[in-house]
Length: 242
Ligand SMILES: C[S@@+](CC[C@H](N)C(=O)[O-])C[C@H]1O[C@@H](n2cnc3c(N)ncnc32)[C@H](O)[C@@H]1O
Image (cartoon, rainbow, N blue to C red):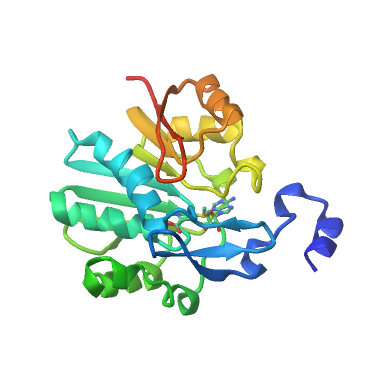
């Protein structure tokens, strides 16, 4: 089926229709679930620990890197299971910082599947179960007020089609790996991420591949290779100069 589509349309980017691919719930090493896409041989998070990865790469190395800000605008590439959004929400509750969280997702997942993931049980024993459900069932395209500190805007759009200018303090770049979606790790895409960030803004990603780091540098970012989450020596933090 997938191959037929490829031949008919002949567009590399649409070689895989992520929407219709099978997704299996698997357990990662910290006990938290992720989704496995057999067609890609790829998971939505690190198999060394989904929650640990998200906390390390996006929350500690991205959100908490901008401690000087009380109002913070976050852009996430790939809403997926909403794990990064949930952990950011919890951080806003703990720090009393205001977060405006925009998340791009070309292929939204169904609540039927998401409700079977174990994040809610593992994080504060179910305390955030209503919030997590709301994150997935609330409207798309405009901000939804989840709490006095946290506003969520999900956008059902492809990363290739967005145009933001000087809006964000932090970008969580959480696309599938370059092996799977090379078209999302290009100079062109990073130029649009650079434009989307305010001066001093920061992009974080789990990826530390040489070609990705070179592309980030090429478009103007100052690159920091910092220790990665469990199972990964390095990750990347790219800063837009002031
Ligand atoms: C590695 S997973 C992200 C995991 C997510 N941040 C989470 O916490 O579950 C990559 C996500 O990017 C989405 N995606 C793939 N291609 C995309 C595109 N062209 N534009 C926007 N999102 C895309 C996928 O559907 C998937 O949800």
